[in-house]
Amino acid sequence: MAALETFAGQLRTLDPVETNLDTVSQDILTLSENVSTVNNQVATVAEIATSSLDNISSQLRAMDLVAGTNLEVISQDVLGMADNIATINEQIAGFVGLLDQYIAIIDDANGQISQLQASLPGQLGSAKTAITILFLWVLVGQLTPLYLGWELVTRQRGDQEAS
Image (cartoon, rainbow, N blue to C red; front, side, top):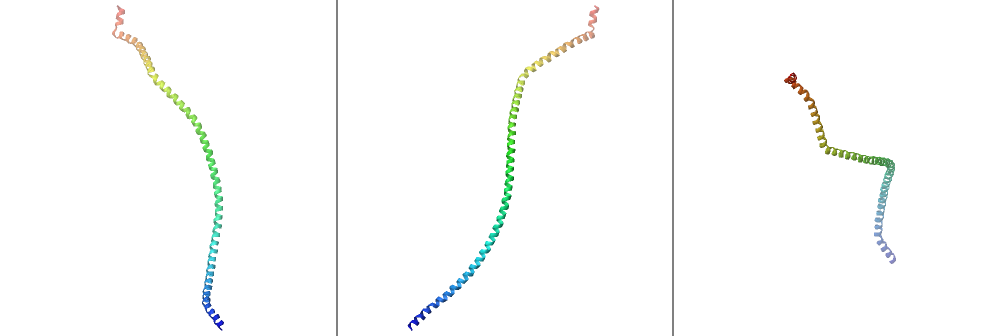
């Protein structure tokens, strides 16, 4: 009997363990329900992420096509601008030679103007002398009719011939 009492005592000590086991069992059930809820939420998030990534992926592919086309157009435009700039550079190089010629012509004209300004007083003096001689010649040509007119007015010529 003593063995039965010992066994009963041991069983009595197991009673609180059984209660604890029930509590642990209920906690495990609650946790498993929470885990399945979390799994459902994770699955929902995964579906949303997958659909979003699929949309983003297709949008990126579309953007890649557009960007490739745009880059091609931009590349062609840049090449066209480079050709235009090369043409402009050639024209500017031609203008530089032309400008050098214009500068030489202007320098030559300035030299001729300076020479003309330097020789102008001498040429004006010669012109003044020529004009003076011309007017003296005209004066001499006018003195003869003036003299004859004076003689007619004063009648001196007729008096001298009569005497």
